[in-house]
Structures are given as C-alpha cells and as structure tokens.
Image (cartoon, rainbow, N blue to C red; front, side, top):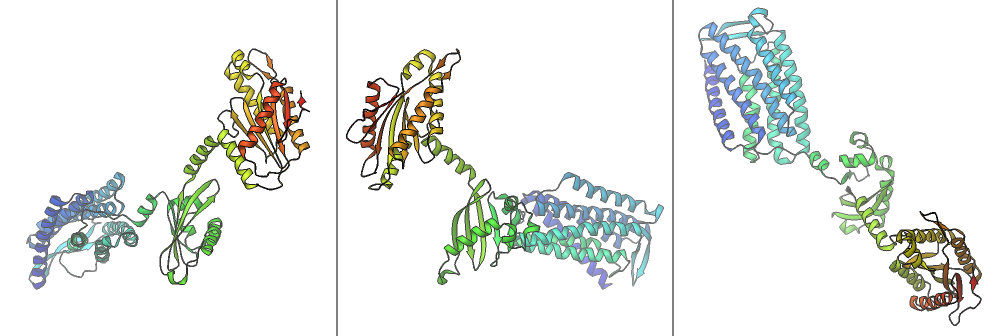
Length: 526
C-alpha cells in the first residue's frame, strides 16, 4: 500500500512539474530544439497520466485499454525523445530521420493495439493482486523485445553521440548533456530488464523512467542558463575556420587538426592522429624544427605562451604560419596567403614591366641600373650602357597605324632578349626608345652583343596585313666603362644619349660607341 501511494504521489508531482516546464518552454523558449523537447515531455506526461489511470481503474477491460493507450503514448514519447536529442546535438535533423522514427512508433502502436489477435507484443496481460491493490501484470512477447532492441540500438548510438559531444563542447553544456545521458542509461537498462520479464516493481513505471532524461536535461539547462542554446562542438568551430589548424604534443605527435589541414596533408584525421608529424607532413616538420631552434626562448619564459611566425611554401601554395606554444604543446595555424601573394606579384609585375613589351619599364630599368652601380661602386666591374631607338618609327605609325608600330616594337624586344644574357638588363625608356645595360663585359664582348642584335633586327622584316614587308633599322649610342668608379645613372645616360644623337645625325642605322671623354668615330654602319 505504501508503494502504491508513493507511486501515486510521485506521478502526480511529475505531472505538475512537466506541465509547468512545458508552459515555461512554450512561453520563453525560442529555439527549435525546445519544440521537440516540449513534444517529448507532452507525450511523456500523457503516458504517466494513462499509467495512473490504469492503476486507479478497478475493471480489467479499462485497465487493458489504458495500458494499450499508454503503450502508444510510450512509443511516441521515445520517438520524440530521439528526435529532440539528435536535433540538439547536430543542430538539425533530416526529415527522413524524423519520418523513420515516427513511422516505427506508428508500427509498434498498431502491433500493440492488435495484440489480442497475435499475442506477440504481450504474451499475457491480466490483473493480479498485490496486497490490497489490483494491478495489470504484463508478460512481454517477442515483438516487444524487437521494439526494445531497436530503441536500445538507436539510443545507444545517441549515447555515443552524446559522449562525443560531451568531450567536444564547451563545459557550460556538459552538465545538461551528462544528466540526459545518465538517465537515458537508466531508462534503457530498465526497458531491457522488462524484455526478460524481470520486474523491480509491479507498478507501471516505464513512463517515469522515460521522462526522467528530459526532466533532468531541462532542469540542468535552466540552471546553466543555456536552455535556448544548442552546443557548438569544438570540431564545428575548427572546421568553420578557413585556416589550417594543427595541434602537436611536446614530442611533435599529431593530436588534432581540422578539415582544412587534412586537405593540405591529404590525410584524414583518424589516420594522422597519434603519428609523428615527421612521418605525415615532413616538409612542415622540418620547417617547424628549423624555426623553433632559431627562435628558442630563454628558460625564464618557457612557461609562457610563445608565438613564432614564418612563411611556409608547400607545392604551389604559400602560408603565413604561426606557432603558439604553451608548456611544450604547439598550436600551428597555417593561413593561406597564396591569392594575396599572386595579386602582389601581379601588381609588382605591372609596376615593373612595360605593358606592351613585358620588359622593364622606365622606372624599373632606371632603378635596377642605379642599384647595380651603387652595389659595385669603385669596383673593377666593367659595363656597357646603350640607348637606342627605331629609325623613322613615326612613319610606321602614320602609314600603317599604331598596331603595326606595336608589332615592330614587340619584334625588336624579342630579338634583343635573345641576343643578350640573363645577367643583362633591358628596358623600354618610352615610345620607341630602349635602354640596354650589359654587365661584366669587355669592349669587344659589348660590341659583339650589340652588333648581333642590331643585325638581327635588320635581317628580320615585319609583315603587315597589306602584305608589305617592313625592315626597321636601329640607331644606337653606347658607352663602355672598364671600371664602375663613382658614376651616377644620370651621367651615364647623358653620355649614351650624346652618342645616340651622333648616330642619328650621321645617317642612322648604326651604332656609335664613345668613352667618357670622346665620341668614337669608328661607328659601325649597317
């Protein structure tokens, strides 16, 4: 009798508690998962009330009716419980998953209502006297065992996901998740005992065991003040970051990484974790070791967080890499700056190179020559500086158009690029004027290189759309210095410009060489 009153008072208390929580959730709950939680608790509330009606009813027929109706509420309680917990953990649940869970609940409800015809859900369902109380005694059948096993498998998977998230979520969410997990284990254990017809009490307490996980979760979440929040796992955060993240132990063992790092390594986390970085990503391991050794902090700062930063190139990508160290553990972050580097290279190339010919523009060639002169000032390095233009270039533009003039300039650029060496500098000064700077050459070598280039220009005519063949010629002024000395760019340019003027005044299509003091009248004609 005392057990009966304890059950009755406990059930009524739970009923009022659940009603209060459902009202609170419907009024203040704003998140979608609380809708599923409310439905789950509502079905659980219905199941508890039907179980109480079953206990209070004296007639067998009504006892069976309330029991069957309670079983229907029970299977839907478990279905909505699963929908709630999966949505809470994943922050979504597919419609097909909800459909399967609710369809299973509907199937088991039909099986329960048709039990009198097949006796597979309950082998027997009849009243029995316990002291002064008449209660319905159940002997469960094979279909009930199948239902419990299916629910147990799904719940065990849910528990697996729960304990995964317990480790991955912020500690503020761990207590509600833990409470739900512990009471779910209790519920599954009770239902499995029922499958073997092992009873801890003759009273129908399945509803109470099924509702307890939801109640424990709700109360814990309210206490933690995060009832409207769903947990975001550590992996959700890491994988949402576009940077590649790697966590290493003091022995450089891979502890963790996000999807971006897995993509770079071409290795899944489960295959990389627990292995030395050297065996998985030797290029990064070597770069890290070199950087850490070159930037080892003093012993007084070893306990503090250390940040190192370096550039890491891997295949066709470049990464701005940061290392955060704390007590030996390392957090390595690789930020892909390849698009930025490419844009900068493009910008630098546009700033350095002539848009038409692709060689140095005026500013770039002037800067390069000046830097070379400054670097080799007062040394024995020899050089030759040449300035040339295309003879009567304006006539090409006026007669055939600027597009033909551009073709002429491009062909001359190609010819000179083939004639000079990689160490020489070649740039477009402007219009049809070009600068050529030959380094570490003697007088004979300079004359040979310039002579070969000018002859090639003369011997390779340009064909235009009209079919005409154009034979451009070159006038060039060149100045040779056996030693660098303390010359400036302006001085050298003026000397070459005077030589070019001399070449043009004396018939064009020629190279005029000069020294610092005089014009060499042994001009090379073509």
